[in-house]
Image 1 (cartoon, rainbow, N blue to C red):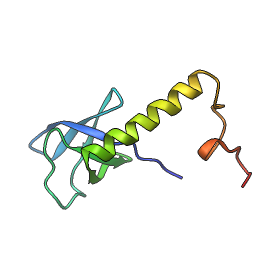
Image 2: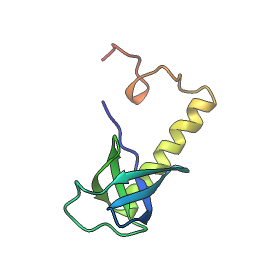
Image 3: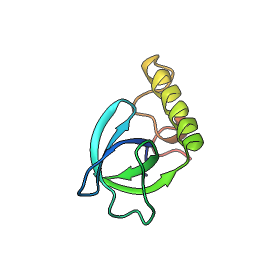
Image 4: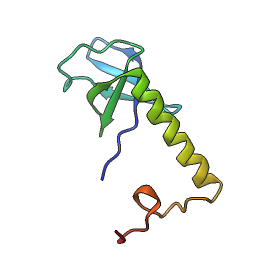
Length: 93
């Protein structure tokens, strides 16, 4: 399963490449696969270097809050780094 973390667009160049901020990490992605216009300050979902779609700021901020909580729980040892989705071990249902 692949998770896409909301990324905030901080710059767009003349080649339709966006610099995005993903939880403090900046990277470049292409906007070529998005049908709608993307503006600086908006949030997008990315996958392997391609922006796949826009997401509302409210949805993005809620998702980022949840990701931050997960990271804090992992850092505190409450969630094992090797555990799977929703805290379940790999291979269990």
